[in-house]
Length: 417
Image (cartoon, rainbow, N blue to C red; front, top):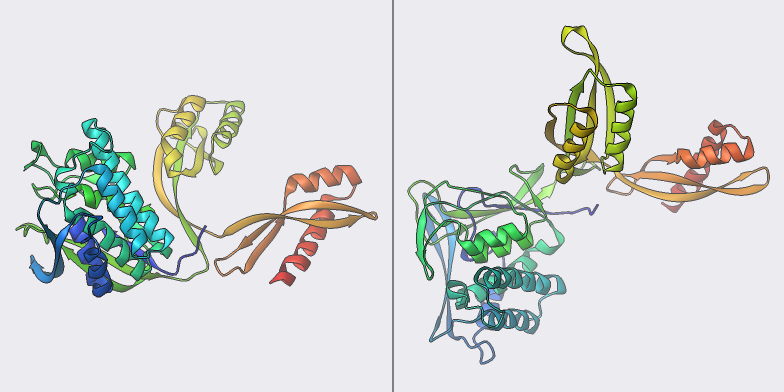
């Protein structure tokens, strides 16, 4: 697992996300305004087909909060189809010298956006008429955001997003009256299995451009902020001023708290059983491990009427929780499984081999090396299967082999440090 020196939280859970809100929040956070505006002005070329690109960046108030508002316009007929807009984004990103990571991000965003529109309306890329998202502000928001994110170091940070509020009710656009979220935004969230929630106002809160930006930026999704020290906060304003909520997107940059540990998100599955045989329990454990569970424990308990029973506890990736719950039900006959989303603190683990001498013969044993995020070795543990194989082969006590392997591992790996 990668170690990050910076955490970014994109907080979309109140007012959703749009391209202009994202760009406004990035500028408010401290991205170089001159670099961003110069990148957007580069769209003003014969190749791109935009004329007299105007960029208006100002401070506005939204429900008592100060935020940065960005508006980009161009003169003349500037609407593009899907193929044209994709070409404009990718060639502009290369022309202005974006890094490979930033160029790839911009390309991913426009492809996500155009692919959703083409699939939704049954057109080819060249025939995809993008209506609202075919205007200059879409290109400006994608290019401007990529420049700002590179400037702020986002592409080397851990990016976390909250679930996106998509609003509700009906609104008018080029295809007539639709409900929020728009069909294109919904298709984009669906394509990336990205969590959304309705409300808190009757209005469109998640635009297709905003949806494309966030689904390609976020590496992790969480309703809560992680442990960190906040270093900077940026607020990007949407176009409307709602009575119920501040219409702002908040982006927070923070420094993770250093404790030498990594974290991941897991699920803990539990069920109580008191009417199955030991053979069934044993087989259930084997099946769960074979199906991808990280760990399985069986805990003795007393159930109702003082009957002896067991709790089967399973540690698994969150994405596997439903599938493994079904396995647990099928194998034990239990009527229900409790599932707890859980954060786990862990250390890095890697396997390596060490050589040991047994009766003048060199043998190899795999050793699990556990390290913290600074590379400090916490534990060295020989693999049991290798020790057992050598114990049977050489008639040497397993305990002695273990001590020899640990000693040799310390000699090799502590010296390397």
